[in-house]
Length: 102
Image 1 (cartoon, rainbow, N blue to C red):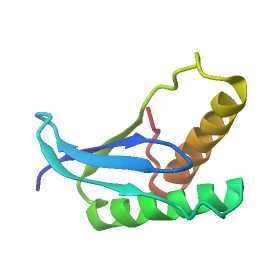
Image 2: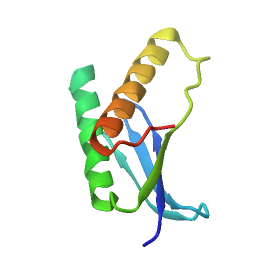
Image 3: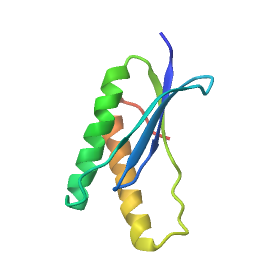
Image 4: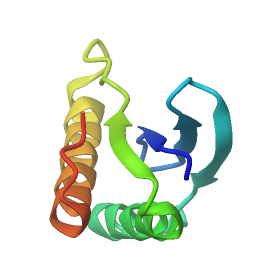
């Protein structure tokens, strides 16, 4: 069984995800785009559910999950929104899979 690492580029408009093997070879990728009309927490829920559905398909192979480091040079409102989403993703993955997201 190939061991996989999931990478996440979190955004409330379009969150990207990818699975890589331990040699860094891209195995699969995709995106999760919540409807624009949703409120912030609804978007977070939509994104987490999308990530969980991808992780569930490969849960026996996942050894690590990482989220892109935030660029804090953006405006503070956007930084807070993305930091919140990032923490919600981290918490959700930890509580479901016991994986500490890096």
